[in-house]
Length: 393
Image 1 (cartoon, rainbow, N blue to C red):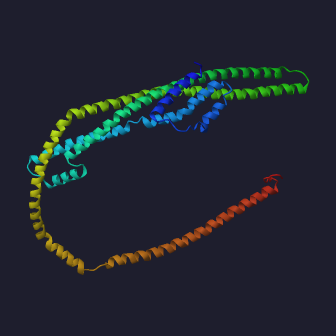
Image 2: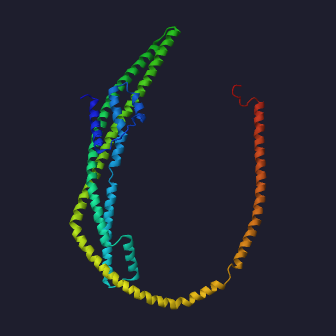
Image 3: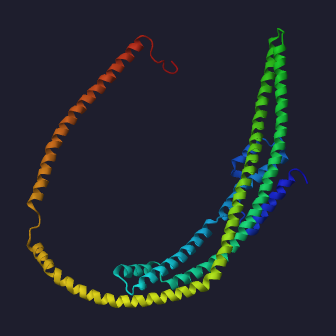
């Protein structure tokens, strides 16, 4: 296998995995990648190796984007948090129901709390059924997602292999660039020594030697530019590969933790479904009994309290209605305050207007004096021959 074939083998394997998952891009945008133009500047060092590096890097952005989109545990975590919250609400509401019926009656606050619970979260039986449906949907998709994530992780390992091989190729290209740089420096040194050792009187010969030196310096600058590009490439590939090792280790830990939570959720639901169902039926029955008793008591108390309130406040309400119907509308003191405010504002605004007019006149005069002073100084400078010479003058 040739030196340039190894990274292609890893890259092709990684891309084939993406094709199998239906995640491979339909179009390549490598022509728009500024890295392509940069690599073209060092292609002369080793065309085969640079081309192999360019192909790997051309797929880097696309491949990393696919991996970032697919490796997401947040969606699953949120759904399991919703299931956990629902279990907690069932437990807490059931406990509250038991506490409510212990004293044999429900007060107004407890009745309102129960109505709000059923309106916002539903009764215990309906919530438990929703949990079961949601659980079955989540578990059906979670296993498929875990398998897809593992395949993508495997493909990413292959892509990292291609990146590592590209690092090797970049170091080999850098070695060639170093050789050319040393040779170019040697040529500059020879040309400089020829100029420094020249002792003749022939000016043309000296100029020829100096021109040769300048050409070697220019060649050195071009070689050094290519060397720096090759060095940046190899350094950044080294940093990228080693840093991704740490990132990949954390990503694998995340996936393993998600799989562990998935397994634990299955075990928990399966072993506790019967117990939870029995608790749901029992607590719901007791809540129904308490609700019926509280409803009868509420009807009795409501009628009695309504009669008492009607007797207490009926006369007061009627008296207030008579006062409102025959009393004055706008109060004189309110209108007087408005009139005083309008007159005060008018007087104060005239004072402000006069003051601002004087300040405006004074400001204009100061500006005129400053500009005139500047013009006089410019005229004196021009008279002394110190003025600015116009272009082309």
